[in-house]
Image (cartoon, rainbow, N blue to C red; front, side):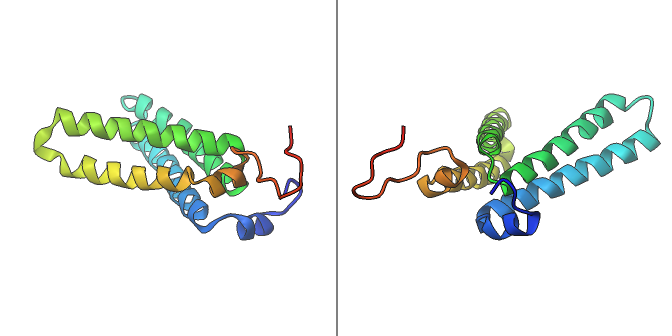
Length: 141
């Protein structure tokens, strides 16, 4: 699928992957819009915040495009991102027990996304598992 166009890639990508890619795209575009707004309104005092948003926005867009292309690196990066987000949700739930519902819901959503991504059939689509061999066929090395 290396030479396929975007329309072909969008048709071949699983629906769940497209949903994750769309969410990442919205987050990346939102971060870039927020960075531009902060750069214009608070250029001097808020520069670390808008610089970080300007850095992570395009990274999320690039990760989304990698997911649509079913790139192995995007699969690994998405799993790592979901694990990191789950860890921060646990820390927030423990550190502020009075507001534990929001981190718990976030943790459930991240666990569902991880469970989806780690399904063997989807892992094979990303190249994270070797393809199944057919009966009578020698396994690939």
